[in-house]
Image (cartoon, rainbow, N blue to C red; front, side, top):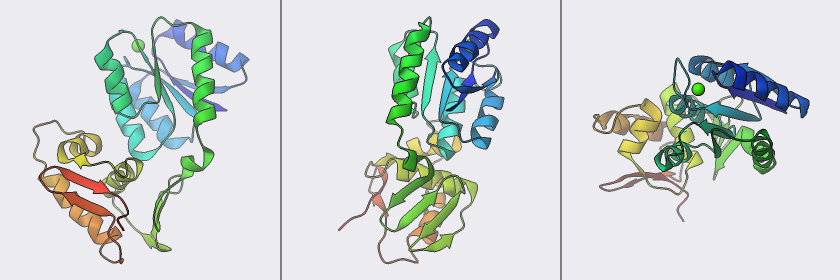
Length: 223
Ligand code: CA
């Protein structure tokens, strides 16, 4: 099992690399948020252990960017036992967390649980009806036809597919895909969704993206 560890503290990082290696894991260690994103986008890790307080790019931003392209399980480490931090991490798509200081045995146990939970087929394929996204190849197909998307359209599609059946507000979409703030102009979201619909819905019989008036959008197969 190949893990990415993003932890800026030297002694904590060395300790974790040693402990995880002794338990049979192959560990890549980075100490900076920018490196963490690069590594996570380059290598198909089985799991990422992510410290929230990182230089370069904080752990939340790292998590958001990883989630735009990959469903790799993420265990985050937070120094503060604040409920809002834990909720925020889980909302951004993390799978579990530990509050520092933690016992190594607990970290190891949680890593093992997450790895067992991860279903291998989900690491490469997201589907809805006849729409398929092959994550490792970044290939999108509908009814067997290849569809070319821009990077933003692709990120938008992954967000919809991972949260299919869930109504997503324009604000949430703007935050997740564009890293934009709450009060930003969400017109950009509407434009991108129109383009995405033009590619994945309009050429086909059954629309998958639906507008929920006054709130946002949902991706689902409707009878
Ligand atoms: Ca730190």
